[in-house]
Structures are given as structure tokens and as C-alpha cells.
Image: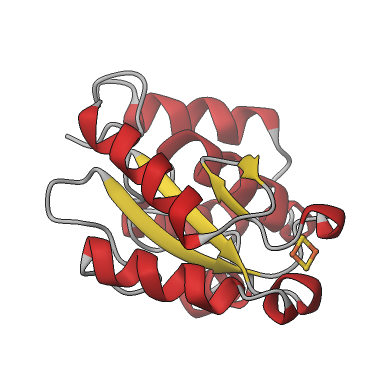
Length: 162
Ligand code: FES
């Protein structure tokens, strides 16, 4: 069972049913519906994609195309701690690649992957709007600015203990 569902899995179909009750079945609502599914599950499960395709009466391929186009949507469950390294220009010139390399090295996974124990996942992001603090990484959306490899190590050490 993934930690990302707050309701122990019992509400999954109920969640989609309720969601569909709050939206008109028109294609313009696709992104908003996907946002809600992503927020609830932490990713877009395949069965949600097929339910959405049926609800909006659009091909699965179209839903899949949108999910893969936007980086905020994920096809796989994220870890309990999703660590995103900003590779936007301001962060990149200040060395965010080194942070990402260290992260991959320590967790032994690549961006878009989750550790086997489900605890960590890594993501590459574009500007998160905190360029003044570059380089930046985030943990579940919480920003860590003026990042260094040492700072990352300290944060990882803390999270590993939890
Ligand atoms: S480029 Fe990283 S926060 Fe803007």
C-alpha cells in the first residue's frame, strides 16, 4: 500500500466517483481532474487514466499524452520523501548538477525513480521561483536554498533516521 493515499486504499474508487461528480464531463476539465488525482494519489494510476478517458469520452492516448507532457504529473508513485533538484538556469549556474549527482549517488536511483523501500524519490525540476536562493532543492515541496552537497547530506541523514 502506498503511503500517498491517506485513506488506506478503501476510498480509491470512491475518490474518483466523487471527483467525477464535481466536474462536468468535458475535455476542458482534463488538466484540473489530473491535478486532483495527482494530489490525492501522488501519481496518476493507470486505472485513473482509463476512468478519466471514459468519463470525458476521450481516447486513453490523449490522457496519457497530457500526463507525460507535464512534469508535475507522474506515472509512478513517488517516495515518502520526494526530493526535487532545480535545474533552472539560476540554480544550474550555481552548481545544482553537483547536488543532483550526489543525490543519485547516495540513493542509487535516477530522476523519476523511487527507492525500493518507497522512502525516497528523485525529480529534476525547472525553476521553482526561488532563484534568489539558488541553488535550490525541495523535499515534498519545502525549499532548501543555497544548497551545497554538505547541506544535502545533512538533510538526507536526518530523513534516513525518520
Ligand atoms: S532557477 Fe532554480 S529556483 Fe529559479
